[in-house]
Amino acid sequence: MAQPVRFQSLTNPLVELASADTRKNAADLLCPRDACRSVIFRKNTATLVKRDGNKITLPKSVLPEGADLLDTDENITDFWCLTSMMDFDNIGFSKPVGSIKFLSCADCDIGPIGYHDTASKPEEFLISIRRVRYRF
Image 1 (cartoon, one colour):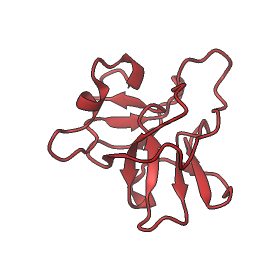
Image 2: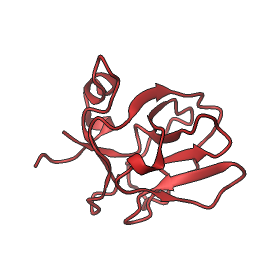
Image 3: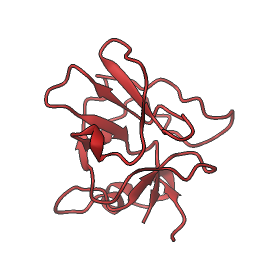
């Protein structure tokens, strides 16, 4: 099986990660933590979307000091969008902060890797394309 890669290591990530015709994910999405092998969701499950990065700012992750795993751009706009929580293989949900539930790895609890706004209609579960690893 191929080794997981990070968004930051890809030459042209937006082209490599999504199929040109369907905008679906071209790889399995994995937990961002190297020691965790949890699959967040499988290839062809989610659609690449742009969302207003000012709507929600994901809080700083609880990754170990010096871990260069997450994006530093506060204006996150590219997300994998799922419309049902049942489409995830493994995902954890925080308690709501207002109408927002933050998403994390269900196995090791690292996160947040995305969010779900319980007030949004239709339902959307959004995973930051920069906060996960990919296995092609």
